[in-house]
Length: 397
Image 1 (tube, helix red, strand yellow):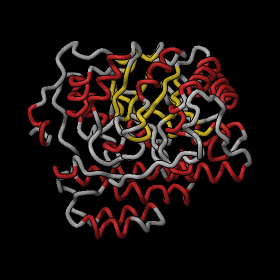
Image 2 (cartoon, one colour; image 1 turned 90 degrees about the vertical axis):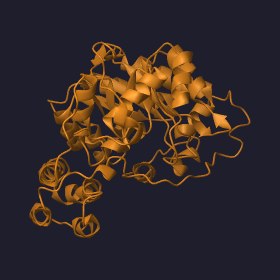
Image 3 (cartoon, helix red, strand yellow; image 1 turned 180 degrees about the vertical axis):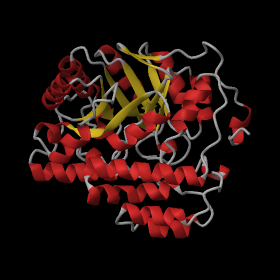
Image 4 (cartoon, one colour; image 1 turned 30 degrees about the horizontal axis):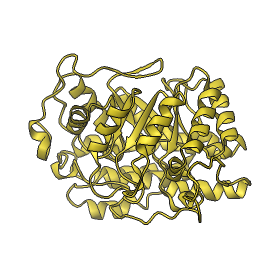
């Protein structure tokens, strides 16, 4: 049985030789699939789980340059890896070229294989200060930041990730593509929504195709890859060189196995039944506890419980119990009470997990647009207290 919905019902698997591995400098990513860096999500426990289901590139959640350079404990932990994580990919965020360059040098010295730069963060606290997705509004500042990272990283390939722009009147992705190419970035990822859209509405795949036509470096498409078939449709429609998978894999790490199958020309296996998902949930919880410690690891697991159980019968009552778990035994007991043979619900394939469908009005610093050629870095957090508040805001966005 083919598990697919809507337009995907008739999508054929990849033909032999149809898609090349994604080339990012010396890295060859095959299949051309990248786990999107997501705050509070793509820590090492989740990356390791996804990696076991399928091949690709698995990027860390966003790491702030100031927090990293000041030795913030949690920042350092989130930037860390394990010996079996190859290639190791870290997404960095910074608005000061000096900080960005120092961080890139430090991570390259640690043996990181790939660095991605975040210029798409839509969090109000960040854009209000002129950072995140506001930075591409000033191409010369963007160029300074990319140049600093590329020089600091040396032989380690650097990529950037952006949104279409701040809103429909202030699009920036084409300028960002030009800057990325000129300053030595090896690829650019485009989340085909504006910051004002957040995660609402449909992603504008036409914008991905336009960017592919304008630059010679690889373009990675991001937005609305809920099923493995969506990835094939996106690449065929836009000509992009790879896909970035975000919310579609929340509570569904096996999606990467399905992606590996369709890119290899095979029909994917059906999604797991609830019994298998329960095993995956316990495994995920154990990894979180090992990495973060029991208290914080279980707190992290509560949100994952809601994502794993979306669409199953009686899941609302089950989630009410799971979001209060305080131990692995409690998690196991709640899961054991559900019919383990219940199949994965087809209507949950495109269920929105994580970010909701609201939009926002993006606020920029007063006078920010008066001089788009200004390359002065915006004022970011400097003290440990400011960095902690900043990172809390980023994790919430």
